[in-house]
Image 1 (cartoon, rainbow, N blue to C red):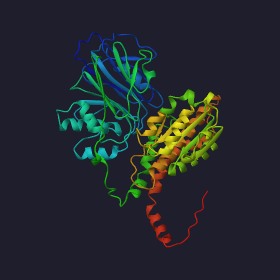
Image 2 (cartoon, rainbow, N blue to C red; image 1 turned 45 degrees about the vertical axis):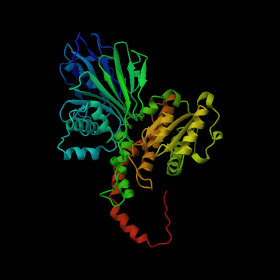
Image 3 (tube, rainbow, N blue to C red; image 1 turned 90 degrees about the horizontal axis):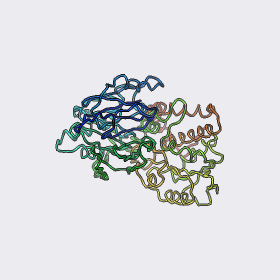
Image 4 (cartoon, helix red, strand yellow; image 1 turned 90 degrees about the vertical axis):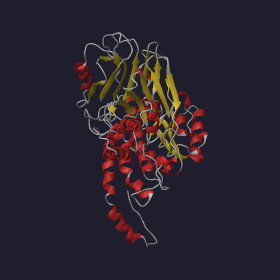
Length: 495
């Protein structure tokens, strides 16, 4: 769905308009310094409004992009703005309602922001902010970020929006591409990136911020890619762009206790339904007719050529890869699929089809730092093999090296035995298997999905609920455990 806001200019208005390009599930923001009125094109819609207030905050009805028409209806005939933010995205938290639409604001109403990504500790931060008196109007994790930034700015009014953003993001665990505006600093936009891409387009008289260059390449070919952990401030005069690396908070932000659970393993078992929901993008990665994986969608042309896939991992991640191998064979996602222990993976394990880019590699790692897995990545890239990563740790070594993949969004895992990291790896690998099958169908001109694909999609949609139901069987599990604890042998049969 679509939402936007505009802020009044301190500079001469000069009949400036705000132009917004629409992309599904991608944020788009634009500075316009002296951009005169023009007619809407198929690629743009123009809207206008006066001092700082939301011009639009609408949800689409069903599959229609009628929120765009609502923008037109609410637009006035003149504008006095040079800064604006907008966003179209799937309703990943809560329903498609006006309240859940972006942008979201802090409690003072001075800070507004749009966000791509997933905040893993949103519920924890929401409860903390509510205990301090903050009232939430939506179900989104984005509003949590807005309220958190506003909280630190209210606590210390001397803080700039950029500094308050840095402090707030030190509390956050997850992925984000953020664009933030504040009425107290009307000539600036604050941008931040971590695990969700942001690119800054530099034009002669305007500056763009978007999740991919296609949003502005008809206006400029010059751009800067933000790095994970970076925070930037863009100034309306177009002459200044300040980018700095965000420093991670000290260890006091790391949870030291599994309370109210007796140990971490149990706590993380119980967290699995929500972790799986995040891995599914709260349904945003599963649309009615296709799988949506932004990191893969942006590289469709090259990925569609892959016929021979290798999965490489270690330990628990290797177990997830072996399951994914069977799943990909069952769906017919590739001509051949094999999974290999990263410690034993050699260059010769990759089919020699690189001239046509028909060989692919998926590496799986919870930490994103596994040495053997990283070695495999480098060897494969030396042979021009297309490499994708499935990792949980945002901005980790493997994620930075591959620059292509899907995050698990499981959140921090403290227990030695893997629980939610493993189940989210399985979930993400299933999504990838479906994505490649639908891509193969598209390339071969098949319009309908296979029965196997439909069944798997339906199962994935039910997975958070069924996992939640399984968690409610804990009393029965304890009873069975009591009966088994003194037995010397146990046979488990299944299919």
